[in-house]
Length: 414
Image 1 (cartoon, rainbow, N blue to C red):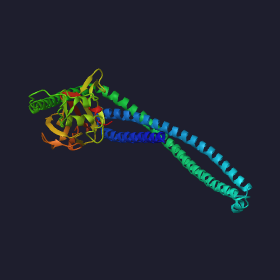
Image 2 (tube, one colour):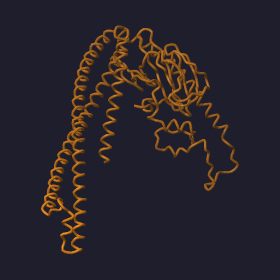
Image 3 (cartoon, rainbow, N blue to C red):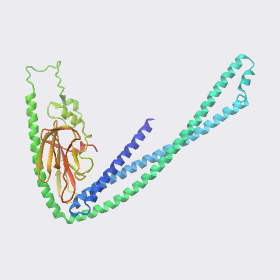
Image 4 (cartoon, rainbow, N blue to C red):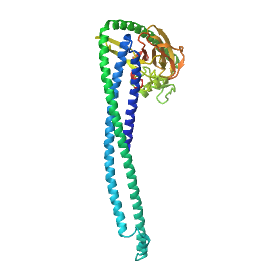
């Protein structure tokens, strides 16, 4: 029973993964179409197409896994059907022997006469017991044959469904491979165009890097100040102790959790204790929602080669998420607004504190939040700005642990 449940779960997981990738591809296709006629948006379209190709390749791999699972299901169903057919032949033969034996002893036509014709009472009782057992055995055999026939019919139906699914998956995979071939050709064309437009791209990159540096300074200043405040508050809140604590009388602080309790985590607080807000955020690693409903990561965290400019590397302190026009941005966790800053080139930036962690949302066209305001998980905090030249919409998202930047993509859901 367990292998069947695992098989069904695996099949469902693959199906859900395929559906999600198809939704992501559809959303990216809309972004590509939006910038198709705009030459200034070629670079943005190239990034979208690059993500589209990656999703398409993952989709094809998922379809291949589904095809393998479907083929394995067909093989298993064939084996079960063959086994059931063998059982059915044996049960029918056994049933036939029972009927023939009973007929020879004339127990079917007149069972009462068979009992009464006994030589004595003891023999009559034994014949009555035999008839009861025979009748029970005959009914059981008949029910077993009927149940086996019903199971055989279900397995045959499941086999046909699996075959149909396999044919559908094969057709989908072929169409996806053709779409991938076309997109790879389009990518090569755009890359050649971008190589010719290298000087303009370098100028744009310099402007973006200058604006990004201003953003980095503003974020770092706000978070450094917040961390300093928390350290000062922790020192003031620490009670004076007249004598050292003994091992047999531990003091339990319900608002804090010891470091040992989260020793399995890779990131821990530097102090002896960690507050509950920090712990709750830490426990959500890998399960936090995206700050926007849909989109793709156009630039990942850390130092990386520029997608089109040769011999140029760029550093990203967070991740950039390409999303729909004027997409709604939501807080990924409960917290407090630590700061709001307006930076030319990145518009509004909102920084939300979650204990010792901070999430940063940049490139917002507007926000109604105020400093020190409490926000809830999934609460709307603003709208993504739209690039007036290219028409693209991109959210810059960062995650900090105290004064250290961390990779947000390892914290949000895959």
